[in-house]
Image (cartoon, rainbow over the protein chains, first blue to last red):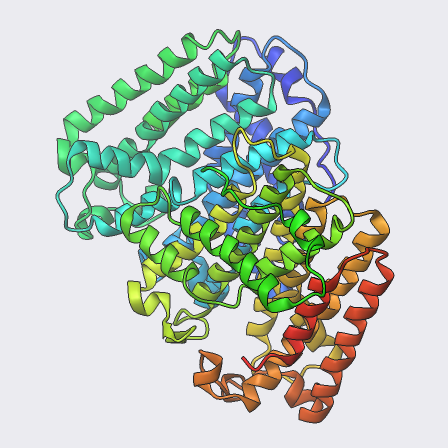
Length: 318
Length: 318
């Protein structure tokens, strides 16, 4: 598994002035897509590799990889970073997307949400069968950790270990999987706002915040900056879910690329069902403000990409 | 997550003379059970934690953890190892068992083998429902990597990273999950012996061999010894599967603790269907001989536990 050659992300950000998110995203998305396309399914038996690639490639907003790369650039803003750290950040960006992709594959299965449409395409179990979907999800999770621990690489072992730790925690029972379990137990149950927040902090927030932290540890961020980026990640991650709840009500399936209105249909508690639409929208704005405030106190000279991604999370229409 | 205090395994082995596998296993199993019981499900939401603990605790031969600890002791035989390496080996022992346990949970699900009995108990999806079983398996995989990357531990980052690398490879699409995918595609298909061997090398062999390698890297094994232990792991891992195929034919469900005869019922290719019972039994003996020969050329002064475990693998009745 060789590194994908790419221009230095740390060097690239300093030349962007004034900052525009669209070209920034396009450039980084191209790197991520190229890397995922090169790496995912490589060496897997044919059927499994096909299902893994179908689950990951050619779709998705890639928000988590962009957060990794933006946090990495923020962490080394004002300084130049060696190419090996660029490689680490790119691997981290791909790894978080693999975890996200596997969670969607398993979530969509009949025993969970039983969804047939994802990113405008048939879901993996519809396309490949349930058994292959189950295995593809399992293999994608393992591959995320494999990507973070390249053999014979110049990537420092301490960075490899820290990235694995952050990813395992974000994905596991005190993170994404734990949040999904709470979600599962909450159907038809009246949650308090604190309980709803806790569910979403785990289910969606943990991996979004984890993406920010994984990017940050690839760069030379000081502890105070790391804490501020962590706060940014928490606020932005929760905002993402509040907006998701809003979009489930106000958008249609064609725009979302997945089934709209399914939370209400499934009698799941959401920010809209708890707060009403207007207060949910106001809460999303408040969280966006918190995210920006955290970036301001990070002391990092260039957090423009992170700021723009938080804006995008709250203002998106799908 | 604190380390489980335990006597030094490296120190312990040197006092065992003549070697007896039963007390050796009992002592080490007690450490593994205590650690698993302390760690698994800790911090997980209640329902998920219960399913994770049900899947892991109070059952299973714990062959993989014993292989980790035996390989670790072999790798440091004749030398004393610091307690931090003992902790690393114990974590590795638990991590491989978590991967094994998660694979059983997912394998037993209706979309895979649809099995209702495992280790003499209802399978996880029968007990907790399919959705919780799916999530518990996912969370166990993530937790395996979390166990290998303790925060603020004295465990060297390079050891953490190497253990994650070995485990990810053994579990993923070029290991266990890949083998399961080949298995899935092989129902009703006539495989050559090479194809059957490749399937089993991935499906069962990769994690068994990985267990040996993970134990070895926790100790100070020289490269030549590491290669010999790898060869041991490959032969023993394949022997395990050959014997599994034999037991599926000759044992009953009560003895196995799982449904007997299901390979033939599912029209799956096995060593017995390919070679016949007698030649399969002879092949298991041949692989056992290979495993012992690899230990002999390792140059390690004490490989008694690994030798005894290989014997146990081939001579077991369940």
